[in-house]
Image (cartoon, rainbow over all chains, first blue to last red; front, top):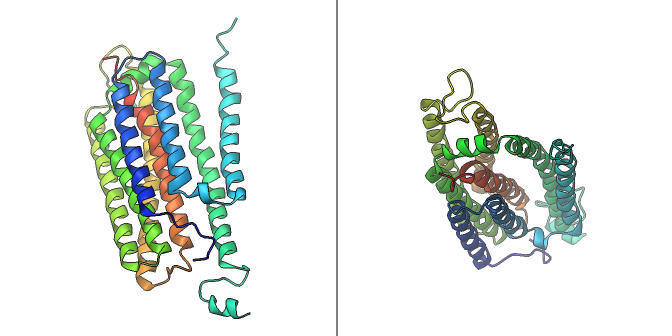
Length: 96
Length: 219
């Protein structure tokens, strides 16, 4: 342990856990409502929120170095390229 | 350097400080997780392309999933992430007993997840939801629903393989904690094992709605 370590109080972990459980309940409830195309949007928005909370707090990225931030953002950037360039093809094949 | 001598057990000689050593371990794990993100990314992309082509078949396939099992497993995995985070916290504060307790709890929850998953696979095998000559699903989307089930088995199968590897890692961490390798000066193995465990949790956070929740409202 060094003086630069960020040891979070355990209540932060319990709070994030509670939020993740609440989000799980909400996403299941939302799935039974007919929201048209928004069903997928709501489900993905909640999943992204849950993943963000896990990354920032459980995985300590909020308190990590800028180099770690760069690696995490870089991964998401390349994932974005993978999706954007591929769907750019598949989603536009019906256009005439 | 008296400080280096003081930390000689925990500090490997190629690092200047414990802080730098921890930074290197964390960064290294994240670089590995980047390859994992893109590995699973390819599967999620395949899912997106085929669901876009056969939305009705995907909804019909998803409707055949055991939603109670998927929801329970989501709760189980989130709870295991909590116990993992508490294990790291126990390591940081040098509480060996608590560390071992939370590692065991994490392993138990991981095993419960795999048990429920195995029950689901068993149910799907007996209901002929495995793609191939014996596949059967009521309704007009019978044929293309096999795409959904192919992706379901591959994605959850690879996820389950990661869980099994995670349990192996946790067993080693438990062994190291027992032997006293893990101290509050040197808990990097617990920290990076936690990163891996949380990553596997995140994959499930996306698999759950995409496989279990689509098309629930339609029936």
